[in-house]
Image (cartoon, rainbow, N blue to C red; front, side, top):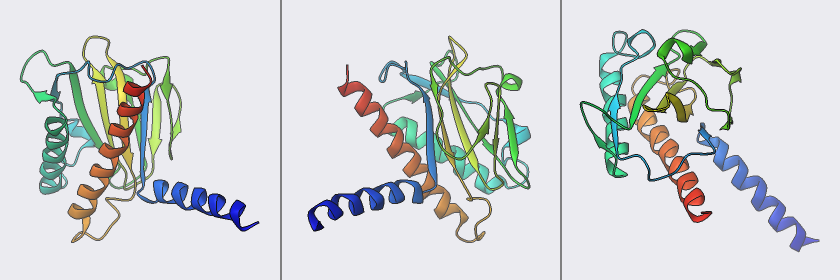
Length: 184
């Protein structure tokens, strides 16, 4: 009996720990990891923190840049393989209409996490930060990372929590890429 309980307890613990970091990744199951070499950041000024919290906006953008550069994707001014942006659900739930930004979901998009979504719109709870990455040639989302409750946290701890959540988001994405690369 005990031998059966240990794996069950371990599975429950690990699934709780994976969700406890408050991060989800959504992605196109047909992407080819390693195919993208360059990116460019696009400010979604209407739904970013650029005017409401410039310091946190700069920290978010810097963290995004570091994550991409660290994984070997360099930033360029013109003709990038990828565009990257983020949205912040500041004072209320945020509906992201991706058609407003000129990109779309691919047919084989795997959705996870805590969103209320349709093919063109996703709604995220107040406090969430959503990072979208899309292919510039197809104008389709490659992946989306979501972290919850960052903006609802204590302002003194918000920056550190953002860094921790973005790192968790990136680790999950890197694990997906490794798994997909190994499965070739």
